[in-house]
Amino acid sequence: RAPFWGNGIAGDRFLRGEGYAHRIDLEMMATFGKIPGICIMVVLACLLLLSFKKCAIKDQASFLLLLVCCCMQLLFSSSFVVCPFFFMTIGYAVAINRNSSC
Picture 1 (cartoon, rainbow, N blue to C red):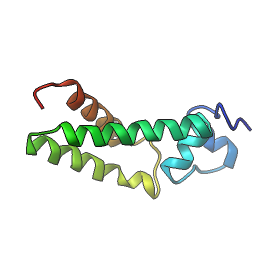
Picture 2 (picture 1 turned 30 degrees about the vertical axis):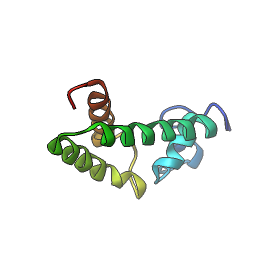
Picture 3 (picture 1 turned 180 degrees about the vertical axis):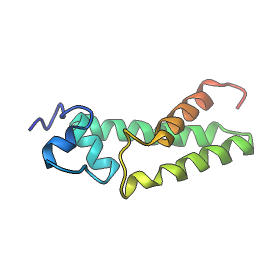
Picture 4 (picture 1 turned 60 degrees about the vertical axis):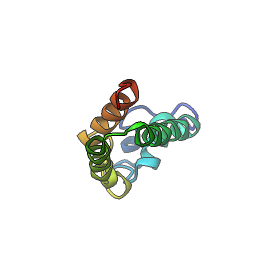
């Protein structure tokens, strides 16, 4: 109904009537719109790649990888709205990028 601006948080549930979009890419595009959803996914991917490059301490890189692996459920059947690991991963990646000692 709103391909550019999206339908808001949990907007995919109204489009389908029942259930939700079972993949993060579809849910992002239904929530934020096609172009903004793709842009958000690209920014998140760049944030993660930059975090892995900046991370010189092996323990921090291992923990970030663990968080990313916990987010793999979003590729199959889950919603980013209810997945705490998604937000933990973003927060940890931002913290790595802000911290100059990493």
